[in-house]
Amino acid sequence: MTYNQAVAAQAGLVYDPRYLAHDTGCDHCESPERLEVILSALDRAGLLARVQRIQPRPATPEELCLVHSSSHVERLARVCRDGQAYIDVPDCAICPASFDVAFLAAGGILAAGDAVMEGRVARAFCAVRPPGHHAERDRSLGFCLFNNVAIAARYLQQRWRLKRVLIVDWDVHHGNGTQHVFEDDPDVLYCSLHEHPAWNYPGTGWDSEDGTGAGVGATVNISMLPGSGDSQYRQAFEQRLLPAAERFEPQFVLISAGFDAHQADPLARIELKDESFDWMLTVLMRLAEKCCHGRLVSVLEGGYDPGVLRRCVSAHVRLLAGQ
Ligand SMILES: [Zn+2]
Image (cartoon, rainbow, N blue to C red; front, top):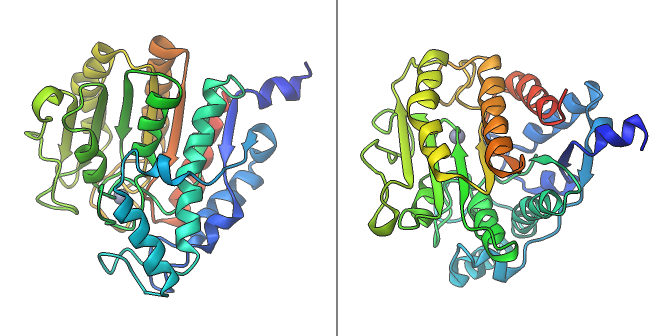
């Protein structure tokens, strides 16, 4: 094996230019430019040559229905076909291509999961859109059409017979959709760090929400007051997230990686710095090494400042690639 092949085997990248075809209109912050900025930054940093490209495939309707109702899937098909401007809420803007792109976004995470489970890559980053963590079983919400990460967790359990999947969601907004899918399930540990629900969208994710029925304890919400930053996040990881995650002994780690908790992001008042995202990933990579042979897939959620996306996603992929 040559040096380049050895490096390429380290990390995978899911991206497809078709993700740009989800047109949300000229004033929408969840824009195709987000991915263009990320891809050009990875290219300029020489990182595209150092990761293994993973070709996304569309998820099947059956795979989407591991999380969503078939009526939701059919409704998205219909409103896209009819040329409607949005589904469910005005911020879930769509265009005729959005239905196919949403299938390809969800399927991209499944392709990354397969690549990790088959040992083709050690771990992967998925630069996909639309994002997913606000999407509920029957409803699109908060720029999210299908819940990409939740579908991937269920797929890993079904296709690869994994029992315990950890989802860490550090997007600055609470992942209401992901929480609701798994809140009564003890086999998916959902840990979210987000700006306090009294101050930011979507208004869920109070620390007291810790799961229901058999799933009590398998939801960990850590809400952050406006102005919180690196030291509060470090404390939350050390005192709450890591103890719960280590006890859980995950067999796969999924990250809902938003970059909107950065101090420069326009959608929140959390003050993380560039390096905060580096140490959060490093800690989770270490956890994955300890618990599950390093199996980890990180998935883009939010993040709306182009400079932050450029710098922080490049550093993120560099770390995943082991450099
Ligand atoms: Zn967000």
